[in-house]
Length: 302
Image (tube, rainbow, N blue to C red; front, side, top):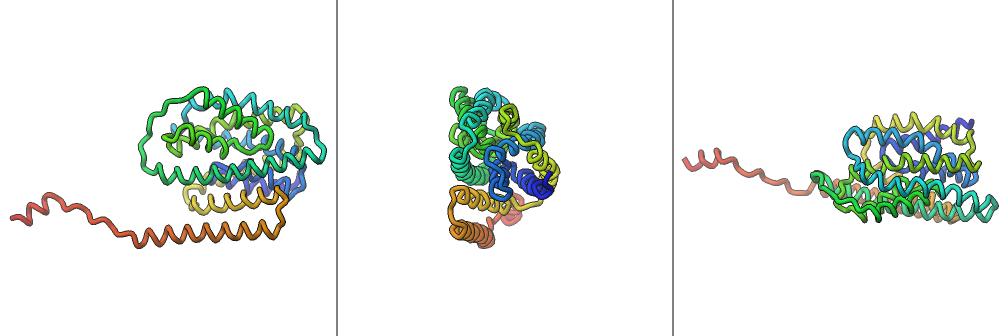
């Protein structure tokens, strides 16, 4: 068991505990790019770790009542069998170099979609601040199809149990609050990644030494991240995660390192500019004068 790999799992687990997202989107490219693990083995190991990490966050949301259980049921009805089928489909493709390259490209595309999902999640978080819960009408067939497509992508790439399905749920249920959206997605991801991990284990793709190292680091990482999540600036963590995912996607596309570095540097400057602009706007925004109390007006009349 590689202790450095366990440390990488610790770092990814902390990010998952802080943001609720980024497990598959970070751990799989870390295993591929930094440790030279074949993409199929990296996907299998990451799914096994996610199957153990996800219940921690799901339990917290279930206790807080931020889970739409009817949505969870319809999503799981589609995602669980399709995630298992995705693992079988990946096995049928074979393990030659062309297949590994194709998996890397698919993983890069999934990472870019995950970035889009995180940006939408950040936007809805600001939009829904202070909004009371709004009742929604569950649409069974579209929700089932979202589960089918999401499960297939997770089974093939290990990415999407959080970020990608959130994008689809935003499109189907725009009135769903951000915290309910995240809680519902996190709970439905538990059986989804478990089915995908089971499929990879049955078809012989799972490497226990890699999965064990990731699990060993990720579990305490999730607990640490959850404890400090209330103190860490969410915008900073989200920006750093988006930049890492973007750079990982470009690297999986075999983009030259210099170009990847330039794009990452530009993204950092944009994030810093947006943060600074928000702070300046907060300082110069005029304060509202409170309405005078009726008793004060009465005293003035007298």
